[in-house]
Each structure stands twice: as C-alpha cells, then as structure tokens.
Image (cartoon, rainbow, N blue to C red; front, side):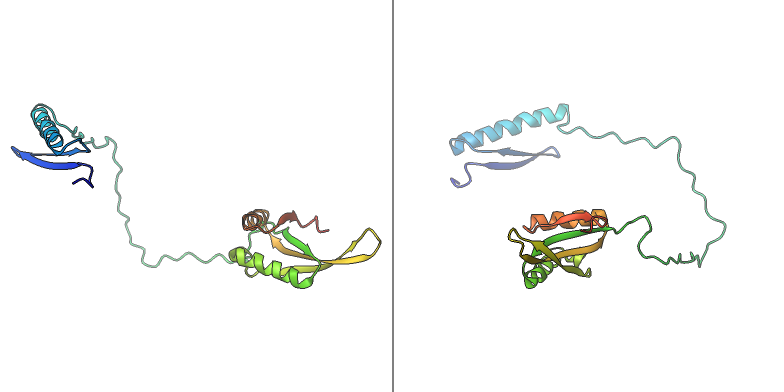
Length: 183
C-alpha cells in the first residue's frame, strides 16, 4: 500500500530450505516485486553451495574437569552462633559530620527548611533530629540581630556529602562540614 512505502516481506521454501526476504521501498510495486524475486532466486542458488549463516562448531569439553566429592555425613542442624555486638554502627565509621542547610531570620522559616530537606531525602534524614540554634549576628550599626541556624548532625562524611548533593539538585542550599568546625 502507499502508506507502507512499498515495503515487502516474503517467505519462500524450496527443497526443505526457507528464506525470508525483505525489500524496503521502491518506485513501483512491479519493480519492487521483480527485485524480490531476483533476490530470492540469487540466494537459493547460493544456499546449495554454502550456508548463509555459519553454524557454530560445538565446543570441546575441558581436559581438566573438577572432581565431585560427596561428604561423608549430612549435617542436618548446622548453626552458627550469633555474633553479639554492643554497637550497631561499626567503629571505623565516624559520624562526626553535619550538614547546614541555612540560617534564617525567622524560626518558623528554619523549621520549614528542615522539613523540606527531610522530605527531599527521607531515607537519610527521616529519623535524624534537626538542630536549630539561635546565633547572634552583628549588623553595621551595632544592632544585634538573631538568626536561626538549621543543621542535621551525627552524619558520616560520605552521608553528609551525598545528602547535600541531593539537596543541591533540588534547589536547596547545603554545606557538609566536619563537627570539629562547629562554629
């Protein structure tokens, strides 16, 4: 049909061999059909002398083969005593990092920022308490101003960095810092 662009697929079987031919496009239906017949005849002649698809040779078995040995006894109840640890967190993981997501003039805005951060990365910040601290900021005319700083503490370094990366991609500010930089 015109909608198909004169494409043609044909399947032909001769002497127990099957060939599938495909012709894409053509100026006229008659020239397309003639081209298909020419292709099929050409490859049926070829197929008698050599295969169109090379058949893979079977692979050889390895010369050295594993020896299978059966155990003398079957162990019915094999139990490993549980390892009891006092710490759930391994000792080599230091949770001495925190992230700061902002400092706000309004305490309500600080709470909203903490909630937004927790909603963006709930797997990592969901159960972690936000630390809101009131800090003093001096202005140019010596008036004291207060800011509410929002931090999430007790994070491992890699966790702090990955949380900040996710917050940055969501448009929130975030700074990962080691706890010894607690100012």
